[in-house]
Structure formats: C-alpha cells, structure tokens
Image (tube, rainbow, N blue to C red; front, top):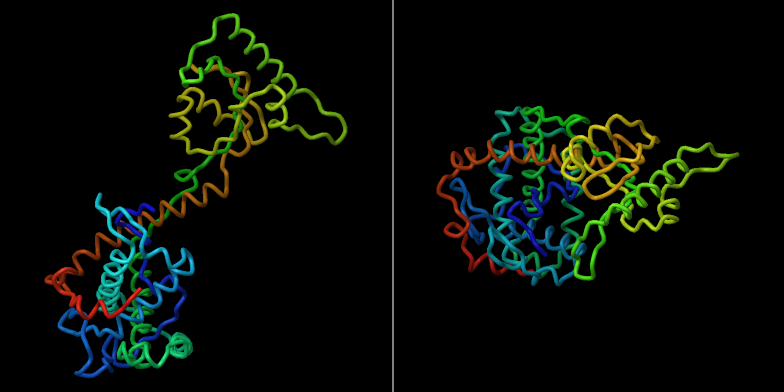
Length: 347
C-alpha cells in the first residue's frame, strides 16, 4: 500500500459526517478537563489533553478498521521515499489535524464565521452518540468528559466552515473544456507482428495491404444500412475480425495526442457522437474509430472534481503555512508532543 505525504488527506472528523457546535465563549475556550488533565502537547500556550486527542484517535481508528480491517496498522507505506507503518503515520496525522483545526478556529472572526442554532442542537446529539459508545474504562483511562467531546466537535464544525470560506474566497472552478475526457472505440488492425519475447516486427507490404483491405471491408460494414431494429455492435465486429487489441479508450485530448498523434486527434474531434472515422493509418497500423462520446460525462465530472480538489488543496496550503507559523511557529510534531502520554492511546 503506497501513500504519498498527501495521505488520506482530511481533517479527520470533518469528513466523517460529524456535526459540530461553537460554544458560547468561542472556539476551543472551554477547557473542562481541569488543571490535572494529562497533556499530550501544548499549542498556542494551551494544553491539548489526552482525552481530546483520544476523541480524534478513536474516530479515525474505527474508520480505518472498518474500511481496511485491523491489519491496516501494520501495513508499510511510503512517505517522502521512506518506509513507515500506518500506525506511526496515523499518529502524526492526528496531531497535525488537531493543530489544523485550532489554526482554522483562530481565523473564524476574520472570515466572519460562526455556528447556527441548528448546528448547536446537532452537536448535542452527536456528543451523546459518541459518549454512549464509550466504556467506563475508556472514560477513566483517557480522562474524558462530555465537555471534552463537545468541545472537539465544536472546534471541528467551526474549522470546517472557516475552511469552506477560505476555499470560496479563491473562486476555484474547472470548466468542462479543461476537464474533458473523450471516449472512442479503436478498431485496430495492427501492421506489426509480435514475437513470444514481445519484439515487434513490421509486416511486409503484402501483409499490410491485406490488413488495409480487411479494415476497409469492416468500415463498409459499419456504414452500411441496417434492416429493421438491428443495432450495430462495433465490439462484435472487432471480435469477428479477431482484433485482440481493439478497445474503448477514454482519455483527455492531451493524452489522445500522445497515443495517436496530433493529426489523428484533430480528426477525432471533428467527429460527432455515434459516428465513425474513415480507415486511418498511424505508424502502428490501420484504425477505424467510433466516437462514443466527445465528452464522457462521468469521466469528465470525475476529472473536474479531482482537479478542483487538487487546486483547492494547493490554495489552502499556501494560506495555511503562514497561519501556522503565526499561530505557533515553534510547534513541531517530534519536539512538541509528549510521546509517553500519547502512547497511552493504542490502535
């Protein structure tokens, strides 16, 4: 299982559907664990208790185990070209996400964000739901209270709203044209023969001419009138001619150029949905293209969402780095976390 540092990148509770609440005194202001609470780390001069961290850790560990099973924790992953296991990586992710939530809460006023009465009511329900699934042992060992749970949910809700305000400010949009994915069926008559070792050898001129004649015959079949309610099936026709490399191709215009060249790609974009190209020669053989969809809506929407997600992430990172330094420039995971306390939370 390979993961780059942009990991399963999320504010842990934010994307798990929790509805959160702003407490009357402001984000993160209600520290109910008291002076005796065990601290995992300090950020902006405020202690973050083992109970607060446990709320995050319990949520993400249950989510991962549900999706991947308990063996997830021993999986090796690649981070900045170094191997580590999911347990160590997730521990670091949790602390970084807590810090991110607190930094965003600190920006709530500047982005004019607060929570509604409905959000306050929903967080009460979420707090009760979380609390009733805890055992007495967990509550005691992790120094938990309902106020701690509520405050975590409170901070996350506000952080999510601030994050959305930051992204809205950027006005990031991706057009259909920019995200376009096109689907064609490539009925390919190769003019190379492949050896058992994978070596390609060009066919002689006589064999190439035979391939052209077969392609032309297939083209004439495709454009011939159909009787009654018959439907044309390009895949069945490709199977009839034994075209093992014939296939549907869904690619961007740029990638189609890489595959077929600019001249052929330009020709493809002059086709209409449901139409066929003439027999077209490339350096690899002869092709008949069936234009399934100039804009494959499903694939285009998926690419659009991916591009928007990447650009939003990049934009947010460009703002967040300076906010983190301003909030607490001395904080680092390795130096600021009390690992003896943190290791009390097990996965």
